[in-house]
Image (cartoon, rainbow, N blue to C red; front, side, top):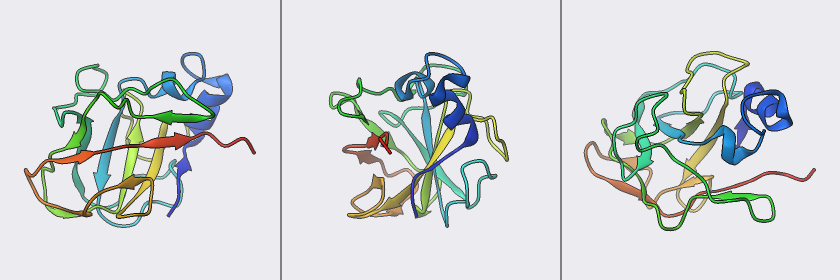
Length: 156
């Protein structure tokens, strides 16, 4: 699996969408939904797999289009956007299962098939993948903390 950008995200980063076109801006107050199974072929495709839960600040409740518990990013350094080290990002799963992939959504959290939604798919794994867990076997109501998450914007 690999990072997959939606058409909406590519257009936003290129300046064709909301804000100034920066990753930090288009994913201000974002959320990551963790699902079972294999990630879709593209981030434009509808979601697949069962929802295990959402990664938010402190594992708190997230409501689309509101800022409470939304994820924000440090300023980019050498093309890398990182989770703020002083902020705890966590998931408190609503269901048990094996984390297959995560979909990072802009604050509006547009779901379903779309070429305008701003989102990105990330592989889950232990020692591999963009979203690394100590175990991909998530248990309902047991909090898991994201120690780090770095997104590198490629130069070529």
